[in-house]
Amino acid sequence: MTVDDFNAFCRALPATTYVMQWGGAHVWKVGGKVFAIGSVDGARLMVTFKAGELFYEILRERPGLRPAPYLASRGLKWIQHFAAPGPGGDRLGDDGPGDDELRDHIRRSHRMVAQGLSKKARAELGLGAA
Image (tube, rainbow, N blue to C red; front, side, top):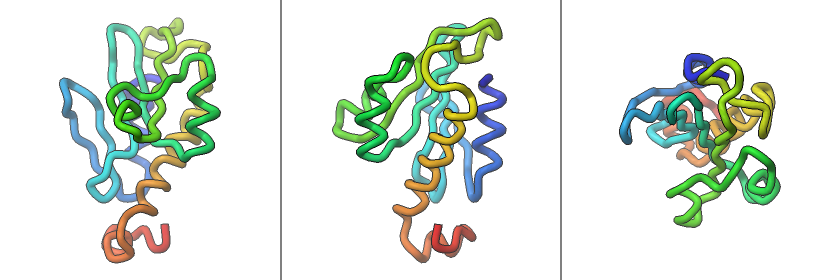
């Protein structure tokens, strides 16, 4: 997944907004709350996403994944994909989940964050019951 692929995928999810902040991170939000962060470090794309309790415990032990720096150190259940670059330069390498699985984790993160919004906020964003 390239940074452009990451941004296009996040943009296609319902009611999302984008901002570049924190020194050039591609930050995606739903209802003003972060659900995914893409950052480029040299030639590698690192993707950070929210995980539920069970997924956090499972994913933190997988190659190419780790508790997200800063967020996890504050007790939040966020995972970062930090795999070495593959042949595409800014693409994620072979360590950790593939693009399809990574998209599933981002989609799940979006859903968790949206579900945490008030009913009124979900309705205003057109998310219904989320």
